Length: 87
Image (tube, rainbow, N blue to C red; front, side):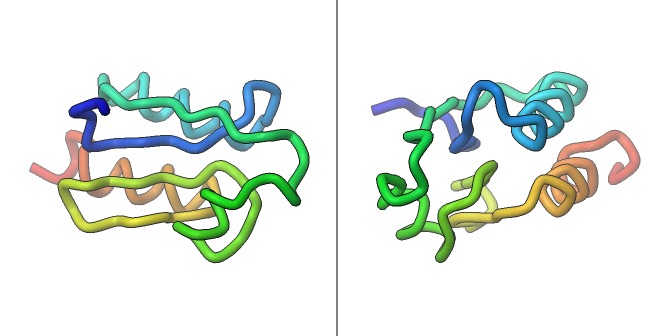
């Protein structure tokens, strides 16, 4: 098991996932990538943590985020939580 506090459930070819990966990279954040099955019916883990089967989904153990869906919400959260503007 990894010691990463940030875990991103994603698909490689997903533009919304890429948007989140770009923000993580821009902020210099280390995270664990967990690839999910392409078929929504096989995304049991994603459904368990976020209540839906879409990706991306972010888990942030440090801040009690157990499954945040929606790329725009994730990007905004990362910026507010880890961005330089929050100092």
